[in-house]
Every structure is written in C-alpha cells, then in structure tokens.
Length: 275
Image (tube, rainbow, N blue to C red; front, side, top):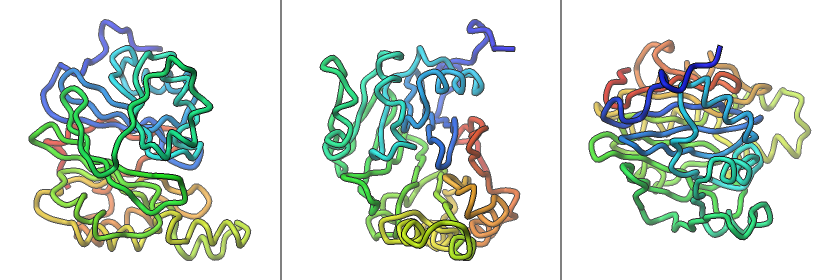
C-alpha cells in the first residue's frame, strides 16, 4: 500500500546529510542526496513513472525535488532525465559535453545549468563538487556532496584511477563506490571480446580489485561507511564485491552495503553511519 503523503518523512525532519539509491546497475541508476530542504537526484536512469514509484518506495516525495544532476550521457544514467525534468519541474545540471550529447532530448523551456567539472557549486543546502573521470563518454564527471559538516562521495562509471580522483574522494565520511565486475568472471563470461575489452579498459568500469585498491588509498578514520554500486548482474556478485572492499577497509564483509538494481539502497544519515 502506498505511503500517504501526510505521513511521508520530509527532508527537514532531521538535520544533516542523507542519501539513498533508487536503483544501481546496467538497467538504470538513480540516487537521492538530501540536506535541510534540498533534495537532489543524481542521474536519471529510469522513466519518470518508474522514478516516481521508486520515490514512493523510498518514502520520498518527488514534489520536493530541487534539481537533477547527470554524470554522463549513457542511457542507464540519463534515460529519464528529460521526462523527469518536465514532470517534476526541476532544473538539470551537467557538463557542456554531456549536454551536447543529450540536447535533442530537451525542449526550449528546459532549465539547463552547465557546470565546469573542476568548480564546486551550491544547490540549496548542499555544496556539490564535480570532478572529471576517465570513462568512454563526452565529458563525464562524478561528485562529492557536503552540508558543511559531512561529506559523501559517489564514484561509478570510471575505468581507471587517477591521482585527482583519489584527492577528490579523500576526507569523505561515506562513499558509494563502483564494483562493476570481477575480472575472472568477465574474462570467462558470455560477453563478446569487444565488449569485454570495453568494460575492462581504462575508460570502462571498475573491477572489484581496482575498487579495493582505490579504497585502500583513501581509507581513514573519517571514512566510516562504504557501499558497492553498479554491480554487473552477469560478471559480479555481491559477495565478491563485499569481500574485496572489506579487505581494504579491514572490516567484516557484511559491514559493506551493496546497492541493488531493483531495490536500490535504503536511506542513510551520513553522520550516523559506521563501519
């Protein structure tokens, strides 16, 4: 049964930075980040109708949405952006390269904000820091989010680790990190050679061991929560992703969360998450 709007938790109910994931994987990616009265949607990989249903499932009201941010133009991250922007009546923030790839989806009334992937900006109560990543898109970027006290990092759709990425993710309190594939499963799996090469390439997706290597470079007493995301349903398993990240965090595998394709990930309060 749907949750009544009058009973639905609003962003203003509690202070601090919070996040949840509506879905993560090759069939669609969308996350929500909120603080105060600001609610941001990171990527729009589902139709407007499906996005609204997933808002309901996560006890959130899309009428309170402040903006949509897009990481890059691949369909599993932007399939619903134009329809969601129209239906929810919100602006869209993206790099100029991403907009060049998507501009035909928008009409003349769309509220588009072009961002420099090296320059931070604020949307309401949330400071957003984009940063460029190596991925096979026109001008892809990923983000960190802060309310001035807590810092949350998101990193998916990246083929290799750079020093700049390590720098941008240092000092995070919580991190959502791509564990797209297990190298052996991809090698022995059903994908054609060209797709295997693309996924495993320097502009493809992170495999478990590389994600763990990155995590080992940024782990600190401040980083208290890690979730694996964007897992391949063909070339990875939650158990393998958890084990790899747990070794880097020196924690039990069950303390690593996994964002699922259909269920996503429940909301977490960044200042209260503990590994």
